[in-house]
Amino acid sequence: MVGFFALPTAPPWLVAEAVPGAAFTPIDRVTEQVLGSLDLPFRLYGSTGHEAARGSEVRFEPNPIAAMPSIHFAATALLVFPARRAGCLLTGAALLYAALMGVALVYLGEHYVLDLVVGGAMVAIGWTAAGRWRGR
Image (cartoon, rainbow, N blue to C red; front, side, top):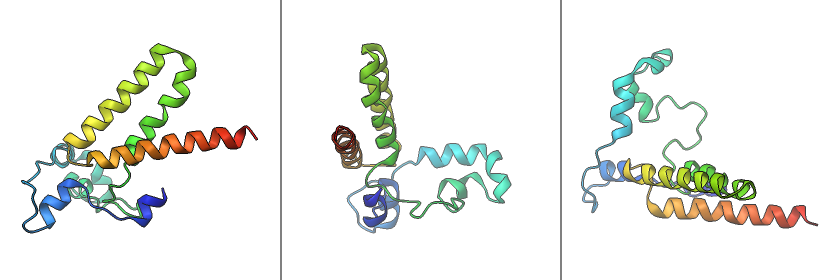
C-alpha cells in the first residue's frame, strides 16, 4: 500500500490520452464502455456510468488512477498462498484466477505487466515476512 500512495503512477489508458506524443496508440478502454452502457448503479451518485468509470465518483479513493503496484492483482495473488495448504485443485484454481485477473488488467489497459510483477512480489515478500514473524 505504501507504493500505491507514495508513487503515483498512471495506468496505460490515461498515459495514452494525456501524454502528447507518447509512444502509445490510443487504448480502447473497454471498462469505461461497459460501465457507461450499464449506467444504472451510478445514478445514485448523480453521474453517468462514464463519469464513474473515469473515477470522478470514487469518494474513498486517495489516488483513483494509481497503477503501481496492482492492488487488484495482489489481492488475487494472495489467495494462492493459503490455497497451497488445501491441495492441488484449490492451488490450481487460485493460480488460474490470479492469471486471468492479470491478463484482464493488462488487456483492459488498467495496468502494465510491471505493476502486476511488483504487486505479486509484494504479496510474496509480505507472506514470507508474516510467516517468519509468526514463527518467533
